Image (cartoon, rainbow, N blue to C red; front, side, top):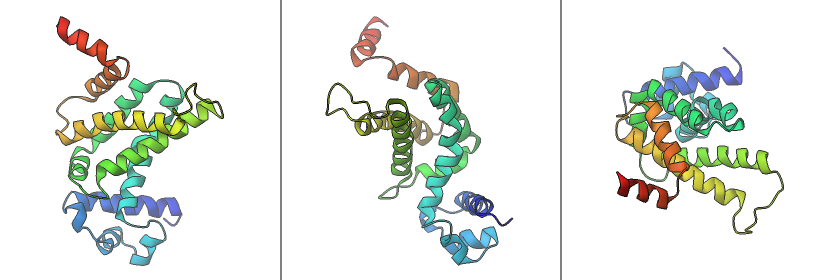
Length: 189
């Protein structure tokens, strides 16, 4: 095991094991490298800090697998896959959801989802402009990343009480209806 990717994976797996035993805030780089069986300087050749490890885990294990689905307009299926992959490591993600402050899990997730959605929008629209100049790809990405992150983070924070299929159905429901539609449906219920 000597490629950069192999060592990245080793350090990420080491971090994941430690999170199950120790609060993230208390995990040291030395503990991560000791668990991985590498020397401390190796960590800094691959990651800036433990928060970058979390970001990489989110991007590679949760978001990267959904790109083909998004590319094919399968948003509900993408949310289902995100929730399914998170559920596979429920204890790990529940512990991450307790992180607060500047480097909170929520801020890492929101930023990572925003980057993914902005990349997706940029690929789809290229240099085209929206009818309203204020409505930029960045603002659209912000809006949708906030809503997607909210649903997933609330689900994690509540202990994942419903199955991934229901999470994706709820997100699809909210995404495809206006507030007026939802209010009307509630009045009719």
